[in-house]
Image (cartoon, rainbow, N blue to C red; front, side, top):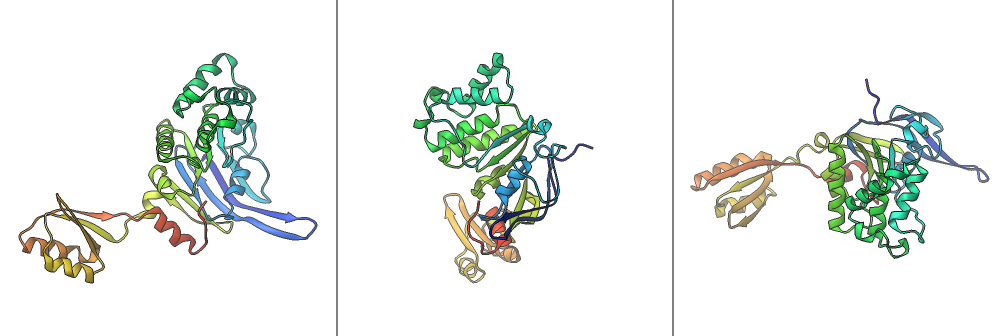
Length: 311
């Protein structure tokens, strides 16, 4: 059986301020798994332990207790690192380099073949839409352009696992769409993507699985479609809405919106039959009845309560 891409088992990490004798728990008995080929969102309030978790799985430092496996290897193992592409939240760069030279530098650090580097880098710059800016120095890059070239360097070594911390940070709506398309294409290729983001609407569109942590503990994990389910409300498309039924909708806490094609009614499932029968009794047609799925934002806020910040 193939090992999961990422496995945390009862992982605990405590930061200690040596001279003051203060201990700050960052993770407490955290357990979760990300299967190969999944796009998994890693969510939680600021200070929840997301950055610590990413640092641990990348092998930047070690857990105090528990076990972590990345692609079947301990964190930091060169066999795992050779298959990981990493984009940190704040991508560091050399301002005197341009995008093309920076990617050549990172490719050389990773042991890339100089003979094929040029073609691979040109392909990646095109993928992140920076071909026309490949000779521009970083000092003149916008925040969004820096994020794009950071994503390109994460893809340099053709990784099986991508760890992305705020991959759409600084991007405009067009840039965020481009990143979503890249992630979708990578998923089709069978890559595993583990991403942290505060843009929940973006996460909802691309991710298969969600892990939510709060105060250093995993508080929810599961497949997106299973966690969100439906909201308990339905949308009913009708050709017309009788006035008497429109008045009752207000009493039921429902709503309706009309356009040239008819009326869309939103109401609790408990009242869908009454709406449908009322429409039919008035001589109009019911075109469609469909459940409304809950949103990731609603689920997230319900899970973490009143803690501020989403990151």
